[in-house]
Length: 291
Image (tube, rainbow, N blue to C red; front, side):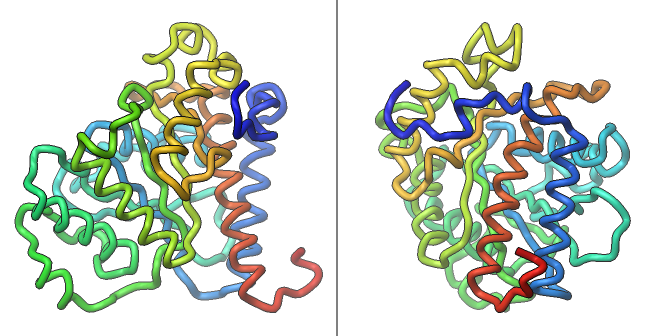
């Protein structure tokens, strides 16, 4: 394997974890965060170029947490899905009283725009991250101006994590120079680093990138081509750790949930939740029984 090989990559999570185990780990970390910082929204903002699998990734996570394609997992059934809006989805594991954890969807970043419009879409995502938009509010890059974004009031707590969703087939050496959407991602990543927020990336469509993965998801964690794409992406986006670039295969349509597909989504979320828990432990006096 190449440089930057992470420890978790050496162990295929599909053979070492079950959906039930991972849900339990995530639930424990949600409870810890809620205890450390009570009465707070924990927002995880999803950001990607258009048609890279952002909605499908959210759908995968919600279905995996729920264990079925129930009402909360049907992102595409949301009345405002597909509109140019900022939408929040509740991450549900159980009915325990705790602060809400939310997956937050932003409209896809566009390529077919001018440099000025690229700056607007970048600033719009930054505004969503710091809490200037409420769920269901219009977020249309072509209608907003920098002045409007500057004048908007902050309505909510800042997000705690940003997840970039990128189609593995688009990972190329010159991707940030030839794409307005990827240039926006680079600028948003710089902003996230300055705000000291947690960051991760879902690398989607791995089954369409590698035929062996299509036949068996376990190959996703052995594939040299996917590992090379992770390394190249980490080099393109300085500050995006390679061990937080997670290969993902999404449901193409509503199906019965599959344990392997649930595990790969929950595995990524488990690591992200671990980062979030550590983030708050460093900033708050935490009772010893929560360590």
